[in-house]
View 1 (cartoon, rainbow, N blue to C red):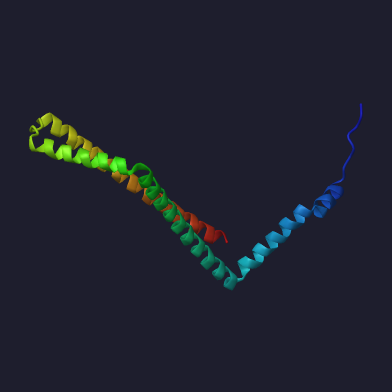
View 2 (cartoon, rainbow, N blue to C red):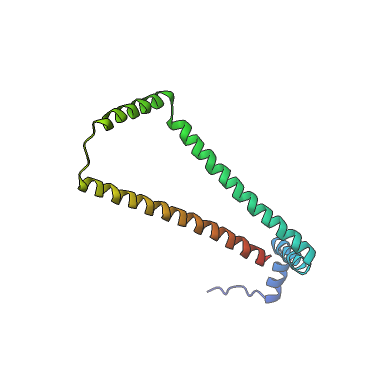
Length: 145
């Protein structure tokens, strides 16, 4: 039966202190402390952070709008547009001779309209919640720095 070699605490401490990663982390920590105690640098850093957050939001908005435009372009070719216009013309002709919808039918569509309004409201609530979360995150990051 072999005994495990005994390693002294001082040897471990010396190895840790010589570790380059440890030294790098220690320097970074010192730099953060210096920055936290310097109000002028903190103010500049906060301003930069706010600017970055606003730029990030603008970039996200641009990406969304580009996606929407891209989808529209993909969907609508000239033949599809012609087909839609013919469809509209046919509907217009049919509507002149259309029957009066039954009360049950109109109730069904009212329920559908309510459903669509609820979905729209939920989506807008979700968007607002996401925006609030981003703002809260930015505030927390400012406090950390």
